[in-house]
Length: 150
Image (cartoon, rainbow, N blue to C red; front, side, top):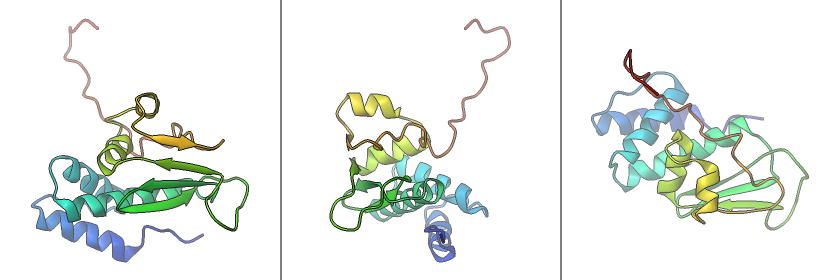
C-alpha cells in the first residue's frame, strides 16, 4: 500500500516550517514531528491544518487498514487499523477529536486513556483504542540531574 505521506506533502511541511522560521528536518517523519510541535507552540490555522493532516497520514501508514476512521474535524480523517473490511458508510469503529487534542495525543503531551476518560475523544467500536499507536513519536523527557531524588 502506498504511503499517504507523499513527497509533495513532505515538501509542503518543510516549506511551512521554513516560512514559520523553524528548522526543517530532512527526514519525513522528523519534519512532520517538527510541524506538529510548531503548530502546538502557537502555529496559525494553515500550519495546524497541515500538522493534523500529516500526522493522520503517519498514523494511516503505521497502522494500515480500514476498520477504524479517525476524524479530526474540520481538517481531516483517515482510515486505519486492520480488521473487517467495510464497503459502504461509516466503518465499524470511529474516533473523533479536536485538532489541538489530536496534536497533543500525537506527540504524547496528553495520554490516550486520560483523553477518553475526560470525554475529549469520542471513540466507538471494537478497534477504537489507539493507545498502542499513540504517541506517534516517543515523548522526550530529560533525565533528572545527578543526585536528584525521585
